Length: 127
Ligand SMILES: [Zn+2]
View 1 (cartoon, rainbow, N blue to C red):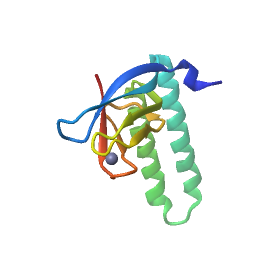
View 2: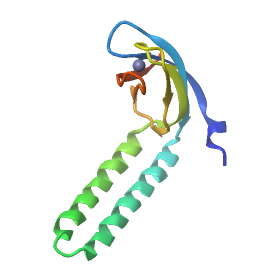
View 3: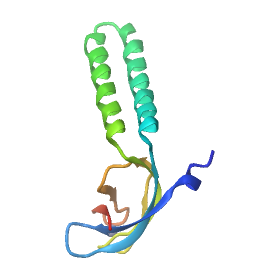
């Protein structure tokens, strides 16, 4: 299944915390509520799976089991609240004009990427 084919193109503007702006775009896949629920449950299953396996680690399991249990709840909740996924994207660094690629990630506006050239944090916002 080609995920990029289902993405919606969204125009964005990038900034580095000042008045300079550059244009760009991101491809976003929006999740419907049932999809978000299933994504969240998958994440929960993953973390609780790790929690279960870490029961076998002597001594440390007192820490790791509750840790992964709560991390699971935390990330599952975040996934459920997320509107979708960023598939890919492209813009330019407003400071040095270097091309900035947006990596696939959970969608949380604003998206932030680090410029590979000047190491500035590029904030990507929906227009
Ligand atoms: Zn830069």
